[in-house]
Amino acid sequence: MTNSNGGSAAPKVPDLGPATLVYIEKVRQATRRLKARESKPDNVREAIDALREVATFDVEVPTASQRREWEFVKIAIKKLTSWYFRFLAAQLNSFGAHVLTLGDTLAAKTEGLESASDELAVRLGAAEERLRRLESLVETRATRAKRSVGKEASSED
Amino acid sequence: MRIDQYLPGFAPHDAIGNHTLQTRRVLRQAGFKSEIWAEHILPPLGNEAKPYLEDPRRPGEERVLLYQSSTSSPMAGWLRSRAEGGEPLIGHYHNITPAQYFARWEPHIAAAMQEARQELALMAPHVSFSFADSGFNEAELVDCGYKQTLVCPLLVDLEEYHRPPDRATLDRLRRRHARSGAQWLFVGRVAPNKCQHDVVGAFAVYRRVFDPGARLTLVGGGTSVQYLRALERLVDDLELGDSVEVLNAVGDAELLAYWAVADVFVCLSEHEGFCVPVLEAMELGVPVVAYAAAAVPETLGGTGVLVEDKDPLTVAMAVDEVCRPGPGRDHLVKAGKERAAEFSLEKTSKQLLSGIEAYLTD
Image 1 (cartoon, each protein chain N blue to C red):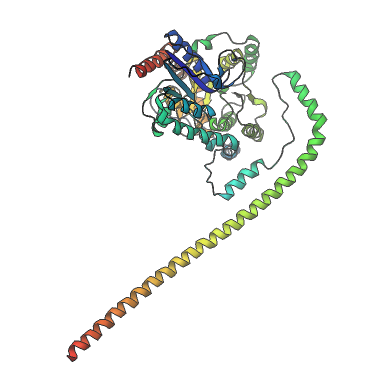
Image 2 (cartoon, chains in turn orange, green):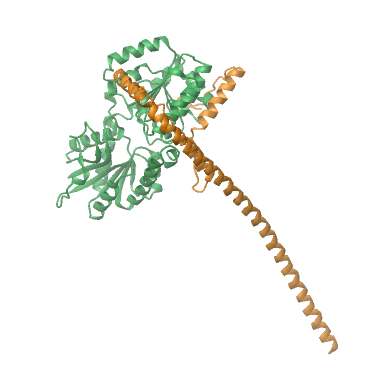
């Protein structure tokens, strides 16, 4: 932390009790959840997490307004229409929950397939290495066999 | 000679809109003809600009097109075709918010920001010269292949901030301030890149640890409805009650009243091309605590308190230091005012004009 005097400030760390420390950690986690995320285009889990955040439709429409008369108008409209929007929101929230379940299922399946694919890649790599060693061994033995046939032929001559 | 300006959105209480009006004043005073053409013109600026598609070609008239760029717009392609037709095109780059900040909240806005970045790169071969509000912005232009660039801050009339504040609002806020603790203020659109959620978090810790009577006011129209709702839920989750108020854009006189009672300006934004509210804070003698990111340290120029880490306790401690009366706070206020004077309209107007004249003589 720098201030306009140019040097580093030496902030006094306050003495914090356990309840305050718990609250501060709660604040840290809460603000972390709102942080921007660098999303990768093929990250299924991240896409599902983003969907989860918008999958619930909130019918508690804000009614605050800087002008009191408009606030009353908003409250009145909210009271008149809340039964209708609750009916719609219940169905939309159910739909959203099912979409998320589908998403979680597909993500789990994708992760399983990726894990199996990674395992196969390791096994394939090991098999390729074994094949290379075998090929090298066969070549070495073939070379030795040719040399010993050549020596026998020359010693007979 | 004519130098016309083009911008996608021309709105009141907007830093780029005000800068465009000041630029027109500078150009006209220097003897250039100058008009403003825009894609979207919001009232009450209807008389100040015209729709850009109505801009006629002016064969035989010496003319330069000046693009005030900050977002995606079909105007960019239109200007490229004019440049390809032989009309010199220059720019003033105000920065484009990276798409990642909007991706989870407003995917359609993120897509527009992505498009705007692509447009910026496509414009490079056609823009013979470009201003940038800050060295931070200039570096982005150079990365995109712009050949001739020059830093020139936004033109801001700091004298406007010394007009009388709205009396009724000021009296109400003063009465409230007398009953409460430190008044935190952040001015800026409620947008994910401006990280108002971090300001709320730091404020929550400050109230718990240092000053239970403190209040936070966030002033600025919303860009993201989803982010604003998330912010309101955060205020509830952290049990802050009505100690936090989130206001839409307010009138100038009303805003001055909020500035008048502010004890500290807290900016934890992660992306700013210049940050006019920091300049406002310095001019009005409100000490600044800010996160050291993007162009904010450059605008502050060594004044204010910069935090390298946005941990809520770290920020709360920094604000506590700044809010204590004494020589430390007095020094911050004085240094801020001296820094603000470097961005006086007179100085920045001269900078802009000399940049344009240098371009024209080259």
